[in-house]
Amino acid sequence: MKFISTFFFLYGLLSLTQLISTNAQSIGMTCGAGNPRKCPGYDPKLPPKDPKPDAKLGAMCCSENQFHLAKRKTKYGCKIWAGAKSANHECLKRASQTEAMEYCENNGARLCTCDELLGKCAKSTGCGMNKQMLWCTK
Image (cartoon, rainbow, N blue to C red; front, side, top):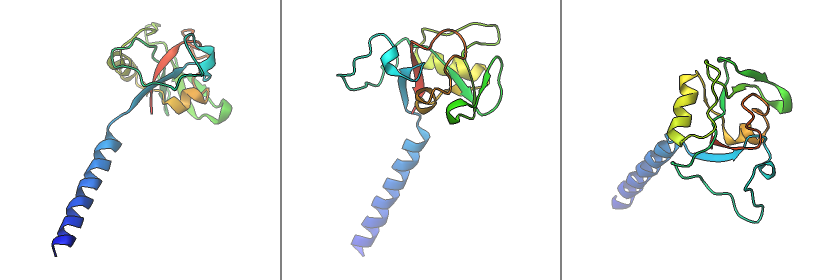
């Protein structure tokens, strides 16, 4: 009986851990053009690193729905709206992780995922950040 109750206790902890990690948003960075070799400072000999939360990177916003100044991206199999300019035509080229996430939320979108950026879904959507490292969600 002790074995069975231990099993259910451990299974419950595992389920809770999966739930917590599923709800937590993991943040990364990648190059705006979808090709890290085009960004300054890229070194193919070094493994990619997760940015520090206080790093200053650009913000590119994505959404499944249209938002202000976004462009519909259907090239490369993409099905999203992407853009970097805010409603008052400003760009966020050097921002902390928190600032970038708030910027996109305030513009009715979210940070683009790393896969969307690597898939070129947000390439050439404004602010000239194709050759800049950008915040993204994993």
